[in-house]
Length: 229
Length: 229
DNA sequence: TAGTGGTCTAGACCACTCA
DNA sequence: GAGTGGTCTAGACCACTAT
Image (cartoon, rainbow over all chains, first blue to last red; front, top):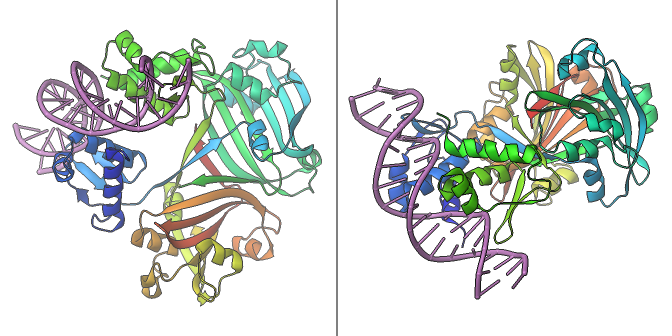
């Protein structure tokens, strides 16, 4: 048996999709719906809360619940570790750590990681391979103060990505997606022609107020990021 | 006062982030945690359920709750109507409907929309403008049977995008993001040089089992899609 | 000020699944 | 079979906000 708040959520969704409750209109209160469906208010509450999380309705105390005037679509997408991304396609994963040095980061990175002026940071370049073919190219700056252990990490065995994930598992962050033309350097790394359009993920993560790392990941030609609405 | 399930969720998160509960380890049961925090089991349940939705823990009946072995990061991103995307940046939105014709769709579209063999569909090309400069170029196939009213829709006044959103507000769908080089045709529309890397959103939507539309949206040079982890 | 959603509680039963 | 999470209920109080 499917659970009741599930059933009620689908029923409510149906009344929205069918047009019974128009865009922007007020729908009945929790108590009334509970009577209508013969269940506790808590159950209706959960169904409506879920719909609100999905962006289908907007709820306000005293104001009641309204169907969203301009439907908001939210895509949920997983951002996996590159290794898993590769292995999920049945290919063999490997990686090359091309560069690993401490250096003064450029101003843009310094600002992003909120590093003080003369502070050095760790810079790494990694090429991720799938069946020995370039899969993604990664450039990354790391705040050494945040993860001092990285100085002794065996980054040839485990990618920086994975090492960080295991030492600072659940950080916060922001991420942006865009398209860029491969410059000469990246084209050489990824073995594509210069100018090839590549999918770029730019990601910065921190733990509480401490900035950990910022990374750019250039994916191979034809890469797609999929999601469900 | 911040609510209790909120507080408990943060507390639990802290114990994960601090390493007290290692990756993959079993954490105490709901009853024990409820005693520990002096609240009802329901409250702990809600906190843990939220963490599970966020991908931080995995829950199994009888198996208990475990910290995810390989942290899964989920990005939630809003897919707005192009008009709102433009207007949110303070620019003026307009659009040109370049093409509108019924035609036999190519096999790939036919397959996607699950149209029968000789079925015609509506094809539209729209250029979205921000302050009269190209913002995004849209190609779209529409299943006429699903939305017959579209034949009489004033698509010069309202973009196809918006019209569909208002007639079929809450459909299901899938979406993919990728990077492509502008071909000669798209380059001319978007006023960029051929080969320019463009961010592409490819989206198909349906209502229950009825396929509505499939669309490709090529964004202007430098476009970024942002999200929070 | 009154009405609506937000949340907590205590207790209960059930479904799943590990041992 | 037993233990864990999944859920429902009935009642309660509170916070916000529209009027």
